[in-house]
Amino acid sequence: MPVPPQLQRIVDLFASAPENLLVPALLDYVDKIPPLPDELSSADALERVQECQSPFFVATRVDDGRVSLYFDAPKEAPTTRSYAGILYSGLNGATVEEILDVPSDFYLQMGLGRVITPLRLRGMSAILATIKRQVREHAAA
Image (cartoon, rainbow, N blue to C red; front, top):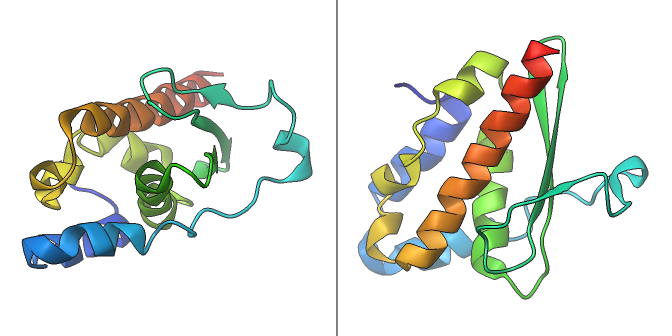
C-alpha cells in the first residue's frame, strides 16, 4: 500500500540513512508537533493511546475529506513525540483514504525496527491504529 508523498519522503530519507543516524534523525522530529489549539486543551478532548508507555493523546478532525492531526505527549517522551512529529509531518492534511491506506508497520521501512525497542514499536503501531479508527469514525458520521 502506498503512503502519502509527504510521508514517503520521510520514509525514504530514513531508509537511506546509516543505522547509527536513525535515532538522531528520529529525534529531529521531536518538536514538529504544534501546540494544541485551545478547544482541544481540555482533558476529554483527546483520546489516550493506552498502549503507549508515556501518556500520549491524539485527536483527529476531518474537513472536506482532509485529516487534521493533534497530539499531546510529555517532553520527557522524546521517542514518542518524535514519532508523532513524523506522523504530523507526513500525514497532516492527507485525505481520509491516504490515512487509511498507510501500512500499520510503515516505520519498519524506515529502519526503526532495528533501533527502537519492541515495546515502543507497539506504541507506535497503536498511535497509527488510533488515528485510523478515529478517521474511520469521522468518515462514517
